[in-house]
Length: 95
Image (cartoon, rainbow, N blue to C red; front, side, top):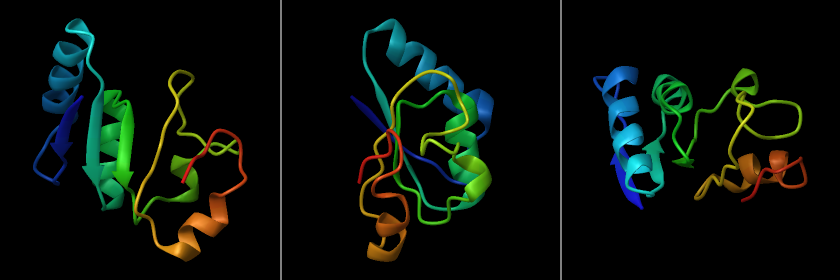
């Protein structure tokens, strides 16, 4: 697994290149993203998981509790208890 810390300066293209190369080598990519913009960058780049996700928006989650992408399962860790409770039993969302 490759771990990447997403900041607002990391572009979708840069992160997508990391994801593409990792997948070419049969590795998954976990992105540490806290801010809404960084979370969206990780989603758009095709990250395999997002860690933290403190400022995720409802628009970034599908009704089933996974990101607005048709592929992949996602695991979010270290959310606040209030945030975890909100999504605990929703679809494929795991916390």
